[in-house]
Length: 258
Ligand code: CIR
Image (cartoon, rainbow, N blue to C red; front, side, top):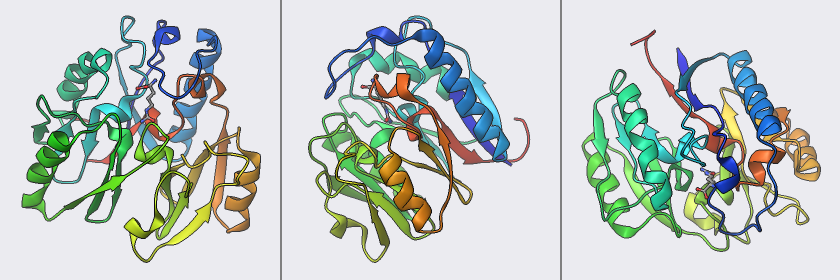
């Protein structure tokens, strides 16, 4: 069974961290409705939702991706690079302990899940403003016993590696080459974002369906033209908080309820 760990939008989302975007008013009601629609789409695609308790005091807590990496063999509880986000992890660890052995990234290491792109046994990690060398070193040690190879990847002018590149098919990546060099990823196929849509590289692959924001119509056309199955979601309010579609869930396989 595939689980999707999610957490409802915090009523404090207006106080979210912002790095590259100016602050714009976020409608909590609309953000909540959009997030619910995203959850229902994941359920429709076959995921069992595992909803964490809402965190009224933690503005960015809807972006659960940044708190954990779950692999078949182990879950790694991350240490987000934004100090305001570090209290998000204990509730995530509590739930994931029911499904996996845990490893934990400790200070001064930092690592955001938005920086982690796993392709088979290669785990690419963005060297961003959020994930540091110590955190990447700790992840390398935690995953080495299971045969994973952690590959640091420089990124520029964006929050996370997955603001620059994400997986949209078994051997296909959606990429913004202004933000990351495709040479890091070896012999895979690339779909380039449309030049007019620099934020368009974040897509979420669920089985063989690409979950994709409605806000990048030109890049959407490119994905469809490649023969990919795409379902769009409107995440306009979460985009104002520098979030998109990968960041709102952690997907993993496990036997029924723990
Ligand atoms: C932050 O700056 O941490 C949040 N406002 C946005 C996090 C988005 N996370 C992600 O894409 N993995």
